[in-house]
Amino acid sequence: MRVAAIQTTAGDDRAANLSAAESLVEEAAAAGAGLIVLPEYFSVAGTPEVLRAQAEPLRGPTVTWASSLASRLSIHLVAGSFPERGRGADKRLSNTSCLIGPDGALLAAYRKIHLFDVALRGIASRESDTIAPGDETCVVPLDQRGADETGTGVVLGLTLCYDVRFPELYRMLALAGATVVTVPAAFTDTTGPAHWELLLRARAVEDQVFVIGAGQVGELPRGMPRCHGHSMVVDPWGTVLAERTDPDPGIVVADLDMAGQSDLRARLPVLSNRRPGAYRGLHGNDGGTRV
Image 1: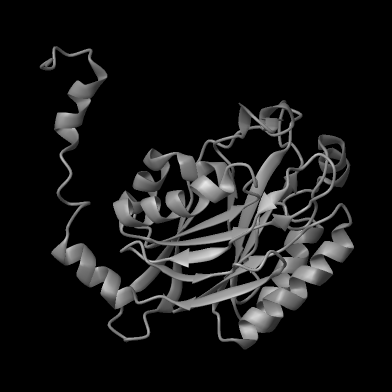
Image 2 (image 1 turned 90 degrees about the vertical axis):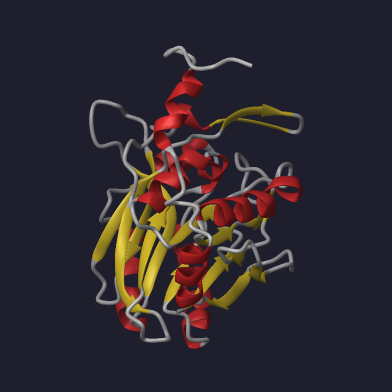
């Protein structure tokens, strides 16, 4: 299966952002990618005020655009994320990632669970002031089969940016059947050089999944941090199959060996060698042995 990660530098003009993203998605599709992943906030970026003003319903302009594009190109498209209007009493927005099928159907919507509330040297963020956390994981089987025709299916797990720091989420996705996990991101230039590749590779190795990290790059509008870029695709052995090192918008394309993944999971059966019953003692509430 051939996949692509798209790297963008989004602004606060939705129409301009979608036009720029469309050209890159078309380039990736022309290169043979059947699953294409866009970055976090690819359709609009900016201050909390901009996000609130540009927020849209689930089936608003961003998903409408993505559905039309996926259908025209006959691809699976992960529409990075966009600010979705609040859906209940909580007036905060959702940071929402959508999977669109080759027929243009909306197959899944994932709302970011872990919010970027940090205070680091050079960057402070309170994403939870504007965004409400999601509370549901998202695992979706795709129809496409492995190129070796062994019938190995692709099962997609959806995550967003800061989620990558929480290994328990990725383990849950793998146990639910995920073989490929997407990470649309706006990873900061403060943490990115030290942590971006490290975290993507760690999540890939420990859960034996392919990880597709699609990032924003460079200077975004006021209210958003400068972004690290380095969009990449990592295999279950931790090998970086493809990476965009140029600090500008573009694409990276890689072929996923699904049969090789199945073979690795059989020979190094990490998921089946787990011992969940023993882990419960680590909470310290049931008389577990202390050393």
